[in-house]
Amino acid sequence: MKATYAVIVFMSFFLISCNTEPSLQRYFVENTENKNFVALDVSPSILKVDPTKLSVAQSDALKAFDKMNVLAFKVNDSNKAQFEIERAKVELILKDKKYQQLMKFGSGNENATVNFVGTDEHIEEFIIYANKKEDGFAVVRILGKDMNPTTVMTLMTVLQQSNIDLDQLKPLQQLMK
Image (cartoon, rainbow, N blue to C red; front, side, top):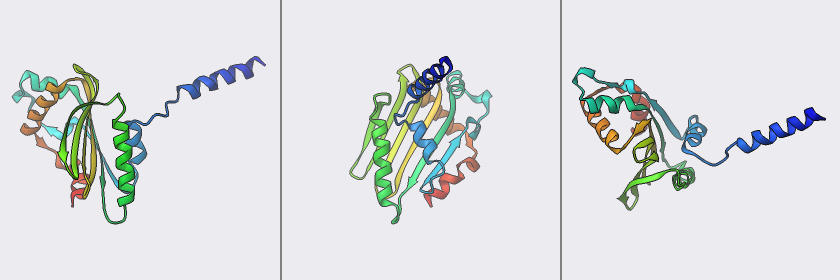
């Protein structure tokens, strides 16, 4: 009897701890193999930079950057209905208070948002969501440790100085064709 009770209690805790709320991470995992999407994980090794030419701030920004995940949906004549469904899913996820909006821009059929997860000075994740009704949408997750808006802007200067390894970006280049 005690063993049955222990199993019931354990299963109850297990079921309660399973979070079924939608998240970008779950959305990425669920759609990585979907034929309508192109998924790409980009590591810091894509940035081929000479560390001796980086400022202290640039070096710190590069150390804070863990990886970048990209998930893009390319719309075509046969998947327009699915595009609308998937776009609505992403926009619903981004409405969660966990994803704080930093900026929004666009007009008409094109728009983009920049969101983050964390606090102003300890950002765990930046999310860039770009949507163009005729072409599709892309969600970019920039993951790191203790990032802040300045870190990301500094990281952009590192990007400009880098010799990006384009082989890692081939799946995205094929999507753009």
